[in-house]
Length: 284
Image (cartoon, rainbow, N blue to C red; front, side, top):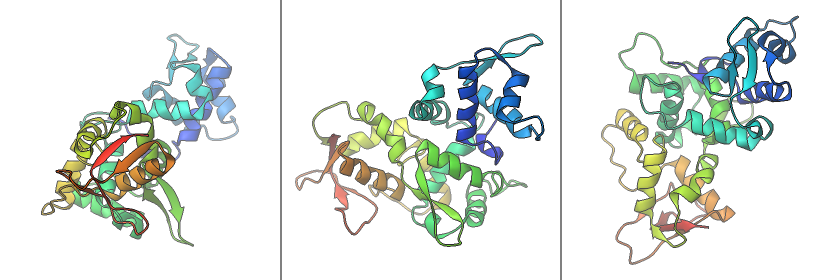
């Protein structure tokens, strides 16, 4: 099993830069590629690791033989358009639910992060490390994920993949505000194919099936049980999802509605300037 977050230097912009070079110089030798990305005067460990992760993520392919020619394994747009690159990486990295699969911890830590709502904003990475491992891996002798590397790199990938955005309070550590807007926005047409309002519960089921790390999904439920074994959330939504729904509503991508005669009501994470209950949703 391999994880993108097991190295503090493997960041989205490094992968994007490397495939950009491959796109510009088709069939480039591996050695020449590494030299262009990171000069030989420097330690090339970072570029070598980035090369391996590009292979792992299906971004590049390497020919057999001594020359090791490297070519793109994706549409050239993925190497030139950052949003296309983001979409490809979302389709490649997300939705993992099996411990034996690559990038499982990336997805599992996200689900745990979403479950913990405002607590993650009020605490720091050292606290996250302790709590995550205590909740989900209490019998492991070694940490499954550490503050460095691991959580620090996760913040960069979570920002890129659409689970939140970083914020720093004064001299304090960078934290990630839970907000899955960028995760949900590309999925709206699939989750809401209808042009009319549907009960939010229908949408919730589709979302849970498509995004196992978000509310109702397999990973989310597992982490909720591990972190809060005696809590029953019912129809109360997480801070991460509530923020995204409000943002997408304000942007006009979706429309949220509360109907008095609805049989089921869902409660968003409290916010002073918004209505906090919904019953129906439609595509904007």
